[in-house]
Length: 282
Image (cartoon, rainbow, N blue to C red; front, side, top):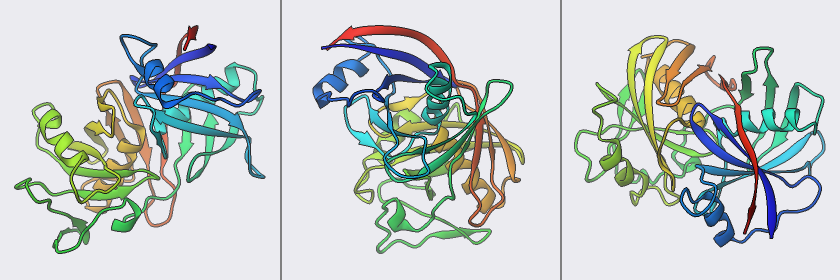
């Protein structure tokens, strides 16, 4: 089959976007993997599929697939690219859009400067929300917030946060020297995370500024992770390290994260850019 697509990126986190609003998408996992392959396909961190809304009150539904073909729950950078795509493609004239994902309803706003703000919903901290098997472990409390150890990773303390997808965030002294490529996969696939986890490495530069690297499920380290930025800032606020509005420097660009605490939603603002349109035979 021959298929049209759009390549997009948000802070270096890159996506293949597919419009399935007119007819259902029926790609096999093998075709998804080929599409996401950087040598034999288009290449991307994730594939975004835009569908008509299936629930009242939503403008669209969108689905997220890793480049391995596995469907996942959430992607903050992808949500921004979704907004840019549906506006530029003429699928909506709205600048505030409501979209349903696998497990959340998001409210998205296209700003006058071209950046997109995403209402990411409230974070969850219960181990079952990730899920995380905390049985037999004792966390250390920092400002009343739980930092968890993991077997086989001496000296590591992890903040557990769900932003609709699972994150385990640790504070490091120097993010550039952090063992992201060696320790990241050990955390991602640790037995205490039955659905695996995104591993974040955060350096606090000031109360309103951090540097972040994330080792993502299936994708490995990416240039940016929107939900990872949200999880890191939320963890830093809960631990008493950060203020309510924080600039997050990723290897792909700058994101702004805001959280008022409690059950308030996390707000993420950042870029969304179209790279090119194309067609591929799968």
